[in-house]
Amino acid sequence: MSILIGGFGNILLPLMLCSSDMIFPRLNALSLWLVFNSLIIMFLSMFIDGGVNAGWTSHVPLSIINYSSIDLMFFSLHIVGLSSLLGSINSIVTLLKSSNLSIINSFLFLPLYCWSIFFTSVLLIISLPVSAGVITMIISDRHSNRPSLDPLIILPYHNGYFLSISFILNYINFFIK
Image (cartoon, rainbow, N blue to C red; front, top):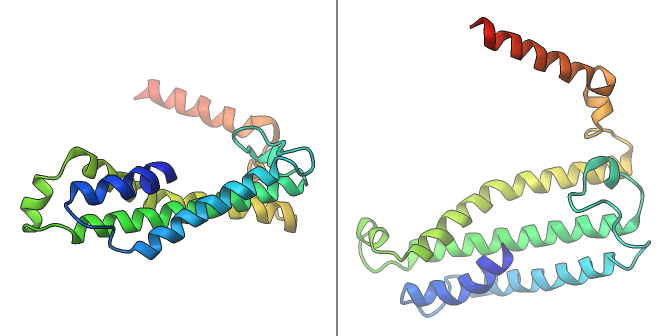
């Protein structure tokens, strides 16, 4: 998302809106520098403690293992999330403030790329705080021994017994109706 919003969006969005630049150029530069710092930290995490051994999804049983490379990876994900959030705020404000016509006419005649940047930015603003919260919960699981995401603690019965009972009851309830 950082390349879509920060890379192509920063170049093409002002051109398509007949604007000279984005509304907040310093926020734009901060977003770019945060992406570079995040990439440096991510590459650094590959070489510490044998790399990130949490799989490509960073699933909770694997990401709770104590390696400092996983902490660096999560810190890098926080930074790139902040960068995407700042870039999407800048894109939305640029789209809303750079229209020359009235609001209704300007939105009707926007190119499709501008619409896609707008809706992608809205979805990023909605979803990034949730992913940052989950990453923060994983970090708190790792460092404070507070098991908020451990599946054996969440389920009242171990080995998926509770889930199998609930699926069977829902299956029976479907055929009773």
